[in-house]
Image (cartoon, rainbow, N blue to C red; front, side):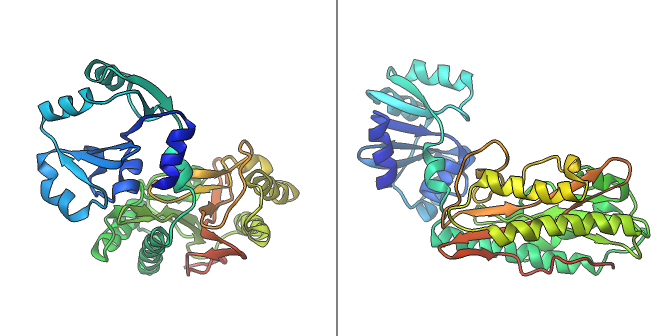
Length: 346
């Protein structure tokens, strides 16, 4: 909290009105952040919500809270003074206009103030992410035994989600990707009714949400015997991943790591088929800072949790992605998944 107050002072703000669910949850640990806001002033942080959540706020919030009726909320906003920041990348324009009518203050757009704090995870945050990853690992092991020719992609996705929920996950981290055969060339090929066939590769990308925090995992495997050219794609992607992991650690440029993966795939004649970034941060959001891509100039620091996920996608033929979730440590990194990532045929 002290660091956030220091940022307010640097920005010349008297207050900060937070509406982004990840920001609200980060500061309060309140589990219904979509229906709450946090107001930060030099006196500290205050959770604002309504009567539906009186008991929930009492049980969960680690900061003081106010339960407000509609009229009380208007009165609270009307009492604000000075320069008040808002999250420009989240607050809709119509809502900003409403705030301007209710609170005659100078509303100042801000970007990334809370995100700067969230980029390095606390030990408690790391534990939640580790638990989310452990749930995903176990769900993958469970569903792998059910893969066979004739099974639909959507059946695998449903089984993954059921297993996650049965074992303590709040939900899947995002719509589960199961892309088989030619659909593997779709990086975000959400599970369809397509039937998996003998000789195809299957890419599964999913995660769990646990106490607000996410995991993210991708594996590609073969169903029965897979032709050599498809296996070559897999081994090229795996090599790119291994080369990046060999260089991963604090102080490394995210842009340079992305470039390293592309150089490996270029030697394999596959660079043009790597169509997304190398990775991203994971925490209260599935995609958050830092970005591992060609356009950011960020440097990895201890406490960051990031994905490393090279992939290649050949339209009409096949696609491969292999993804690891890692914690950057003082001495390098820690893998958060316990799953093997080598070639597998089931």
